[in-house]
Amino acid sequence: MAKKKKVPFHIAHNMKEYSYEDGGLTITFWADSDEDAKLYREKLMEFTDVVKARHSYRGFLPKPVDESTLKEVFELASWAPSNCNVQPWHVHVLSGEACDRMRGKMKAAALEGGEGNPDFPWKGKFSGDYKQRQICSALGLWEYQGVTRQDREKRAWSWMRNFEFFDAPHVAFIFITDEFPELVRLAGDVGMFTQTLMLALENQGIGSCPQTSISCFPDMVREELGVADNFKLLLGLSFGYIDDADGANNFRSERDPIEKTTTFHSA
Image (cartoon, rainbow, N blue to C red; front, top):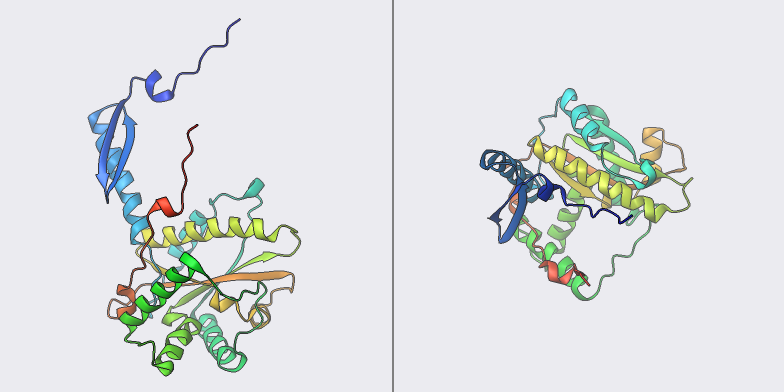
């Protein structure tokens, strides 16, 4: 008996094709009616707006995010995908006095300890396109911070802002445990969780900044939080309501065209 050919859902249900332009991209989708298409387009545009609005903010107001909103955002982020649904992330969220105390210790450690002893060491030596993107990002940020490349004192100030959490009223430290031998693979899961978290924050009008810099002193963080040694600190995330008066928040890093990062295959 011949196997019945599967008909695509949108064709089987007589759905119409719609498309619209957004930022130079053509978005194509299918809907039952013009009214449904309008509603779906609005939802698509809302998502696009959130994705494009999110960027690394580096100046925050002292106003805290209320507890119910915090729990709502982190619950939503927990729906991020992970390999075999293991959900390997362990998150500690600091607010109020806990955040301020960690800020003080982090800054002191950075002033005294240089590069620290991160659980996942890196040398930061990029080359080619990666190096060029790094340089453009640094120079672009400095411009909005009023820092010149020759001003070592101001450059040091710009770097130390990381350890002050950019004055954010909240900071999250994200760990994975060393019980997994495939830590690099699980780091991808944590990345998906962190991106989902940042989008959920952005959707609530809350800015964020992912920071590997504040993972440089994991022993101090573990001691302060009472975390066991087998929890390895991958990154931190400063977040809160953004300070529009801080010029650093006007900086937006550019993205290369997808032709440089993505290859499509069809045959």
